[in-house]
Structure formats: structure tokens, C-alpha cells
Length: 378
Ligand code: B12
Image (tube, rainbow, N blue to C red; front, side):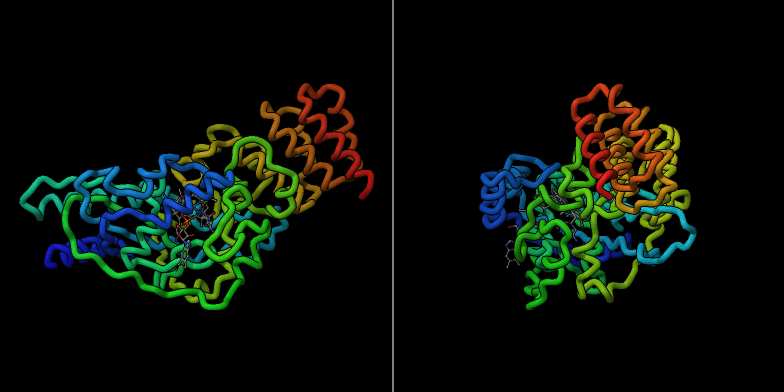
């Protein structure tokens, strides 16, 4: 009991907003859900595909006794709803990706310090595996079991006072700590998140189709399927809609951690046009070390084209033509063609027609043909 209390106090002293302890026992509901999702072609992207490792902590650490779950708020006052009246077409970036410092590093450092604290306070060899996001554990379910938060219908974990604007991390350890009890709260009858999802990705309470979630779509490799382009709006990276519409989040208190404030050079709503022609060194300066960098420069440029096609600001036409004519990646040229077709106008159409006979990619040629036809109808 004393050790558990001491670990929790230590964690709070290093900026952990909520901490709880779960028993290191299997997660049968999660195992069944992952198997069903895999069978339906909806296995969560960017994750370990070994379901037993994901849902049985003892597959990770045979003598695991406890899982220490932590939540750290990333909410800051720099609201993306703040209007910027400068006439510059700007993106929306989901709050989790604003931070100057990638959250994986921020939480990992805290977890490492908790492991050191544990090792200094027990008399036997401590085995402890810290994870943030990229490891096998089903982190939301760990947090639920550890009493750190409760599941919203949008699938997110809600922590009292902080809403769902928290990152999660955990340590699977052989140290026996006193487990907490789940909070047992629920959303009630509200379905705002399900109703507001622009792509219908939240297929029901606690169910998400990861292939349709705009968070995935904005991070996916290759070509963005046509059906998701307009729903993307000006979403450059990630999506917060199911969290923004949630009443539980309206009164969340911003923790305003400096690490999670937007980088000054970029702000929370980056200007889109400069992204189209950014150099590698600008990409490093603007995005390096943030949670937006891991998918690379081309993904952001492809997304910026789509956003500009949705905003339809004529200022975007010359840089889009530049991408259409000079980008080495067909998914960027294709997105530029689509955007030019959406914006339309003489310059856009002339550029599309110029490119058609010299474009080497079948895929991009088909985008150009569709874009010319679309612009003609408008
Ligand atoms: C892959 C992944 C994604 C994928 C797929 C997401 C998905 N839900 O499948 C994509 C790219 C789409 C994504 C999006 C986002 N993600 Co993500 N993602 C992950 C990752 C790496 C794995 C998720 C996973 O495998 N889930 C497995 C399934 C089985 O769990 P689940 O989807 O949570 O489903 C549970 C519920 O349905 C619940 N449940 C089922 N039935 C019932 C019934 C009842 C009554 C109840 C109460 C619960 C319940 O239990 C299920 C398990 O059985 C985790 C990190 C990790 N290692 O866990 C981060 C993680 C879940 N993501 C996170 C974040 C921040 C996001 C985004 C908010 C980012 C953004 N703004 O764009 C969005 C939110 C989208 C959403 N509404 O869920 C955070 C969540 C923080 C939080 N407060 O919940 C995590 C934990 C990362 C972290 N370390 O902070 N993500």
C-alpha cells in the first residue's frame, strides 16, 4: 500500500495528471474485438498484429503482476477555433499533434523516471516494460481497468477534469502494486460523436472503423480515396471532431504544458500554401521532433493539396500547378490535380490540359481527366 501511494505521489510530482494500477491479467474483451476486427479487415492500423501479445501482459513479461497506467493532458489554450482573419488559407491540425515536442518522448521520459523510482524503492530486481502508443498493450483498456478514465462512445478515454485530451502510457511490471477500480462512468444517451463523424467511422458506441477514421486517412500512405477528400475539409493531420463535439470535453481544464504548445513557426493552424513548396530543411525546422513528422514531408504535402482544394482559395492555384508539374510523388501530383479541378478557373484548367499529354503516371492522368471534367461542369 505504502509503495503504491509513493509511486503515485512521485508520478504526480513529475507532471503525470492521472495514474492508476491495473492487474496484469488478460484482456478477453479486447482479444475478441481485435479478432473480429481482423476478420472484418478492420484491424487497427499502425499496430502490432500479434493479438495474444497485445491482450495478455504475461506474453510480454512472464512474471508481470501490475500495469501502471498514466495519463498526461495535452490541452492548451491555443484553440483551433480561434479565427485568424488574415486571408491566408490555413489548416486544422488535431490538438494531439500541435505540440512542440513529440508526446512519445514526453511520456516515455516520465515512465522511465517512474521505473527508476520503483527500482530504488524495492529490494528485489525490478522488471518493467514502459510503453507509449507504439507498444503492444491496448492502452485505453489498460487505463479503463486502472481507473484512470472511462470509455466514451467515440472510443476515447476520458479523465475527470481533463476530458479525453490526454495521452496514455503504461509500465508492465513484476512489482505487485495495489490495483484501482474502474470508474464505471458512461456517456449516457448522448450520440453527438457518432452523429458528427464526417466519414461515419464511428459505426456505433465503442466501435470504430479505423479504415474510415480521418485520423488514419490523413496519415495513410498513397492516394487518399475520393470519398474522403471533401469530408477532410481543411484537416491536415489527425482529426478531433468526435472529441470537439463531446460535452464532456467542453469544460476540460487546459494544462498548458509548454511541450504541448504549438511551435511558434507553425502555430496551431499552419498556413497551407508554404507547405506545398517547403524544402527538406524547412520540413525539419517546422515539423521535426513533433508528432506530425513521422509520416514524412510528402504526406503533409499531399494533404495540403486536398485541404486547399476544399478551401477553394485562388491564391492556391500557382503552387498547386507547381506540385502538379514538378512533384516526384504521384500521390502528390494526383492530389494537386484533384484540388485544381475543385478550384477550377482558366489557369487551373489550362495547367491540367498542359500536363495531361506529358504526365507519365496512368493514375495521375486519370485524376487530371476527372479534374478537367469536374472543372468544366462547375
Ligand atoms: C491504432 C490506433 C489508432 C488508429 C485506429 C484507432 C482505433 N480505435 O482502432 C487511428 C489512426 C484511427 C487512431 C486515431 C486516434 N487516436 Co489512436 N491509437 C491507436 C493505437 C496505436 C492502437 C489502438 C488499438 O489497437 N485499439 C484496440 C482496440 C481493441 O481498442 P479500442 O479501439 O480502444 O476499443 C475498445 C473500446 O471499443 C472498448 N469497448 C468495446 N466494447 C465496449 C463496451 C463498453 C460498454 C465499454 C465501456 C467499452 C467497450 O473496448 C475496446 C476493446 O475491447 C493506440 C495506442 C495503443 N497501443 O493502444 C492509440 C491511441 C488509442 N490513440 C490515441 C489518440 C489520441 C487518437 C486520436 C484522438 C488522434 C487524433 N486526434 O487524430 C484519434 C481518435 C480516434 C478515435 N475516435 O478513436 C490515444 C488515445 C487517448 C485517449 N484519451 O483515449 C492512444 C491511446 C495513444 C496514446 N498513447 O495516447 N488511433
